[in-house]
Image 1 (tube, one colour):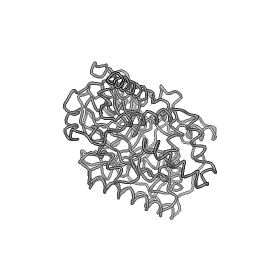
Image 2 (tube, rainbow, N blue to C red):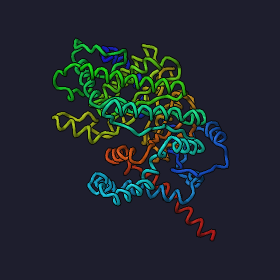
Image 3 (spheres, rainbow, N blue to C red):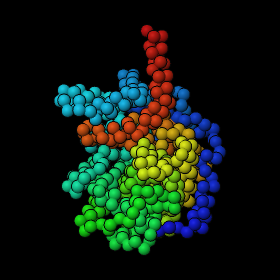
Image 4 (cartoon, helix red, strand yellow):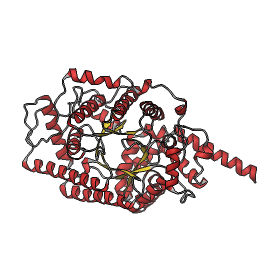
Length: 498
């Protein structure tokens, strides 16, 4: 799986980047990003099916960011105020710092303080960024999204299991999540999301990743447990996590790795039966090799028809992202596998840079934000051209309005159908509403990444998001500006009409 592609083939494959998103011809239909709400009215006068039909067939290609009255028409003023307040507070870094300090401090050992803090979080950030405490609540949130012309990615917010017992318990939660989609309208749940660290012990994933890195550098180094998969390394992939030859897996470790893979296959089978794809999240570079290996091995088993079940994730902020995507996608095509990829910018910037620096190595992350943007747009362009040629599937997960606009233009120029099961745009639930609704109004399929679970269970997820995504939270200026504009308009209308 980790075999290298001859450089001649790699250079030949670079033809796919000859029409990058950055150079896509601008179309008047996509000249401005579109927009809309954050929460939705409890009931809609128009049926969800009628709304979906309207978005698919009416006014395609129009991005309208300025008509806030139309965009926020389904949002009661109280909800709009609440959403606006949450985003404003989340964008204030000292407030985020204080919140994280309190959550990690001994103050949380005091029952009264803990109850006050948790209830405050529950009715602010938790309700804003999470879909509910269980599958029933998440299902109701998906139905509200559907009324607004969006779909939902169900994220049972678990990660970092320590042993097989917790892995089995986590798998049951993921399987219940898949089962819950059967009671929802078809296609309203667009994906099930899983983290491999939730279904395979972290220590085993780290050991297996070390072995895969060493095997990449020395192909004669045997891995008896290795299955048929796709390439997981490029020539520029970071190897500093493994500085000396690792010991082979013990029989117990090999068994635990096999159990983790069997859990993944069981989840894939459940998703195939429910007709909902499974997207495997990317994680730290320390364990990403084994995550990609297991994901691609599962894809070899389940992605043999025109509707991919298994999607891997490429983090475009990594310097090797574009090369790894190209190698894996081309190998999948050679094998006749319809490989799905979710392209994101990345969510572990602070920790990745810190770890590399502590080991005396350069960060695996691009040196500038523009380099990350360029890499993301190149990856999107490559995959869009693949889709246009009948190969692969793509989820473009981004909060960058310009990347969304460029991808929409590229898809339009390539003649990729707007409502195409091979192309999906996605944003975090509670974030980038302007981009989500702009793409929806242009006729594309758009999903929200929706973590759910009891608040105590979801807190590690929320804390990590707050710590790693400070820039994203503070960059939510477009949504905040549009909400302010609409609130001012409503206030003025109320005064004039009084």
